Image 1 (tube, one colour):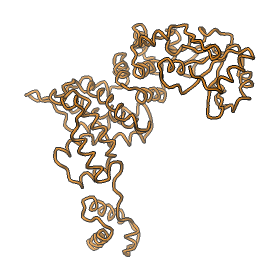
Image 2 (image 1 turned 60 degrees about the vertical axis):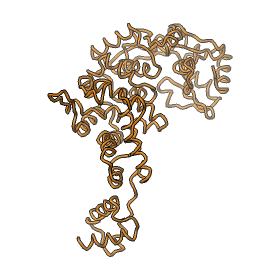
Image 3 (image 1 turned 90 degrees about the vertical axis):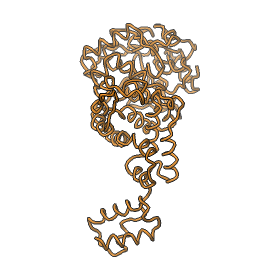
Image 4 (image 1 turned 180 degrees about the vertical axis):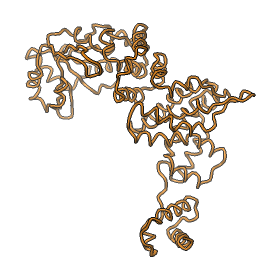
Length: 462
């Protein structure tokens, strides 16, 4: 396993002083999965106080005192950062994720210390000195078999967030939750153990599931089977009971379609920043939330959901607010949900340039095309199977041609132009400039001089 030179040096020094540094957690798991290792967490055995550990580490770099309050010594060595800790015992003493009594104990065996970990795949250690894999709970075998298994039922239930972690690990690493572990998680949901979780912690697991998974639907399908979706996210659960017209959606109900759209979006958005991807993935989750309330079936068996994009706005807000208070996320997602049918409507009707320019003032067209493309491909129609979305291709080309792919066109006329024409600043400025901008979008003028002439006409009319 690749170990940075600075960490090797630290490990050798600790070893000389009688301490035993073991790399733990995600770093070992990711190495075995042949994924990039980003975070190095080291448990140091045969040391009994954080002060003792800190004194050993200080000669190597800068110690962050903030981590120490949580039982962790954060060490920065040049560009490298490491988290060091001492093995500990934990005991649940009260409700909530902070309701643990923690006792540091450097005399613990690795097996004892790792028994508090959630899943076997996260209980594997790596001896930095000897290069030995330490695997008391057969985590390596579970990784090979693509199985997610709880280490200890007793300690697992002490933190119900681990049920959400199960969903994100299943999605991130394409695993199957082992049967007894599945039953344990399902019982925890049924008992209401997850009720105590603050939404901020749940949101962090949602983000990992969405941003780090090739197929986030795997995690959502597991949450559905465990009863999480029905108990906590009715906005999503209602999709499972909503039929669609098989001409347009041969894949099945709205839940199935939404999961397919989500997976398509995970692929389409993989080159975007995390913040933009989160917006796009939430828009994929929310785009059809209005269908349960608007879906009707007529006497001929035709199913429609007219107005679902508008109906889904308030429902989207309700869903997202169960996870986060980030108003910015909601403000970005809603225009995408509201307009996700526009590319298809505009393509069918041959929308004018001015109509597309106006669309750019309401929504980011580049992101909208991604959502509409995921929506179009997230089904089993012939075009979707072939990867064809003519409406998306058409709007993408038109938006580039009009230079409105990622932002609306800049207004030619500004407030100073009104002042230069002799007007005193007033409340009327906003109305006049809005009318002028609308005229610009409709190509009633294209140059500054034409715009000034248009302004003079507006002022005379006013």
